[in-house]
Length: 286
Image 1 (tube, rainbow, N blue to C red):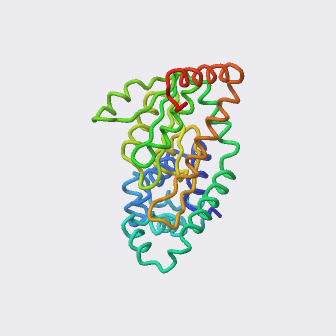
Image 2: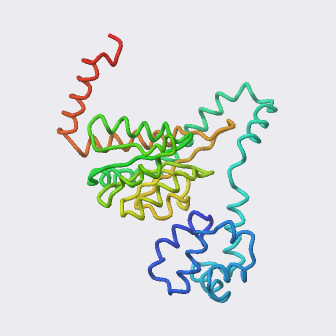
Image 3: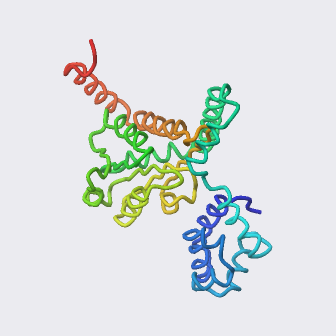
């Protein structure tokens, strides 16, 4: 039986096309409104999903659960394991008696994040790179703490491809920038819980415009992942007050490396030209 909410979401997405119309309505509501499912009665969920309560019971059984209560428990557990507020984690860190071990614990946690992230994404990274290579233009978006991850992807990729741009939304211009997304493009969005509203807007706009969507995120059912063509999942556990972005940066670096390898000699020539120009224009200390 499915053990986690992420596994349930993956199962629903893989079988969605096989479901009856009633099951599709119920399943879509489960994924789109997981918070409501965790705190509402079955009758209330059925009413909001516009299905019969019996349909939710049968859907639960179709997904491998004895009944509705067992399915709903995954949604309750999801709420229990939400990210702790940064201030709470910061207070715990200040009060901790283990400050001497913090540096070691941070490095150990980051190594764990890298190991887990590498195991999850080996195949998908190559698929995502192939998708980006086929796109006429690539848009990249990451906001707040995810901005440096997005910028790193932009910077590395732009060294050998000119048709890459950043959706940054500075000075309230995000809506204007979203107008540049077109059907033959690909859009990379980076976000983790609690998810940036801007990131969700970019993902939604990309799907509306027919752009291929790649999500770099912490859950298969994050708002930017549910309708993505490819999902690259990173782990961000940390003993510090702020989630670790080491694994997210590793995904981006791996993507850029795969893209260069796929492009071949032409990309190497463009990279060489860019590097020569930077040196010639005094970008680096002699």
